[in-house]
Length: 272
Image (cartoon, rainbow, N blue to C red; front, side, top):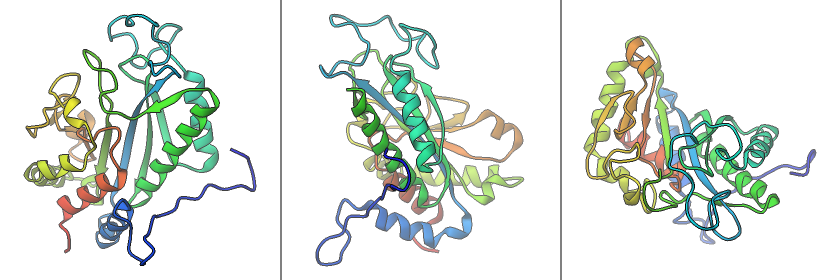
């Protein structure tokens, strides 16, 4: 925010007795990443969020009533369809300047809802880069008098919720014939569906309803190029027979260390 030579510092939280704080999910996540480092885990997280004005109304929405139904807003362009692109662009530039591995951004399905993508990142750096990108998002929005919400269902009713879609691959999955390893990983994820949901964000039950491009919170499902499943295998990966998969279950307010940590634990085991 202040230019060279100033830096941003991310700190872990520890207790006075030298133990990691109970909210410090980075500590356990880092141990898992180091244990399974030979698999070269790559992550890419898609952070959805909603911009609110100072009256706690989604930015650009009518003071009384609602905007037109969803449809023209996703990846939209033009006044009346897209709100706050100036904030989004300023955030993107700040992330690039800070060295964060931000890789994309797009307007989302609900008006005043956006997404930015961070990754690919290897191992623990995924959580580190996403936390800093989140900090900068709030910091930039502050300059514009806007609030950032990462609630998974910010507006009740026939509006899309907000997620933190998590893309994952190992070196085995990225190699020729990698689909075998992707399918094995999905089978393991199915067996621990409840354990994953438990750390995939608060209020996620309001979002994972089986509607609005989500799978049901009570059921595990997967498919190729299907947005209504728990796990989506991209169409090009299915065609090639290797690549990565996307876990669509995490909510927008989930802790990235909890997500990446439990994925490592489930796919590769707590210890090998």
